[in-house]
Length: 336
Image 1 (cartoon, rainbow, N blue to C red):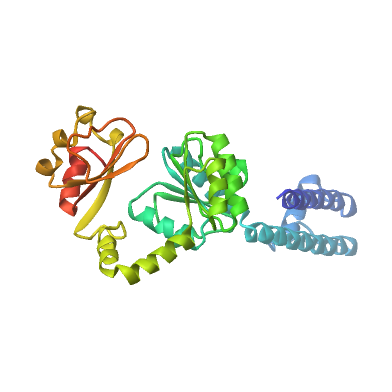
Image 2 (cartoon, rainbow, N blue to C red):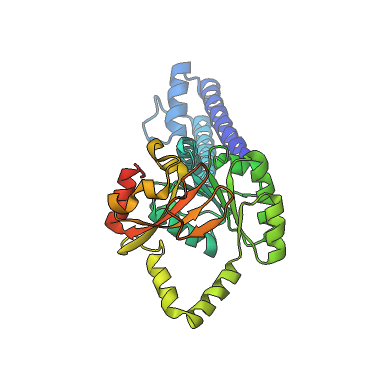
């Protein structure tokens, strides 16, 4: 960028010098007045083709030819600099970068996705279906127009660097998902992110159980082993194909399925429902949904919880219902 700036300054300086030399040359070589000298220099340097103010002698003609040749050379140099400037996308990148920064600055409680490979793209597609605000960090340029999402921003950069995480708005983000292919990079990002924002929820991928333990020690809240999950899934298809199909039907893969699962946290519940028992929530009667799971503040899951269990701070309930029932539930709790 500095090199191009220097070239632009040089081109402007050469053009100014050309004008100065032209005015001085016409004035002293052809005895033109200063006004006529300026006029002749401008029409010659810009090659507009107007006639001379008075006939030129041989000296004036030779000087004019030299002036034209120099002006053409300077124009050519200027065009090459302009082409280099545009080919480097300097203008467009600055505009896009500024818009991107303004958009990220407006984000709050958003999700940062570090890595846009096969795993990252799968995560993105899932989040995009639910209109989650996401900042994707990827080393190589990603054509955002191909994805056409108003709630997703693509940031080109190295997620292992603190300045890139800060640009992605890590101080205001709620979750960081790390899906880089190298375990060392994922570990480094976990350490940096936890230092920058101690309260952020961190989910990272890993290739084996040893790395999983290290990521946990580094500060990751959850660590996913894609290969292990894939293997268990294939084994489940063999051992319990109908159960797998049923779970797929309940998954979040498609919002248009007839039945769906929803996770409701204590914070999602209106204040009048705080510290109430599952029985007192009366969701079955109010919405038609059924509470099939409960996560207590210690992180333990209870399947088919007792109706007398209370919804307390840092607890979640897992709800099963049809799409219209889930909508009623979201409307009841004012969940968007």
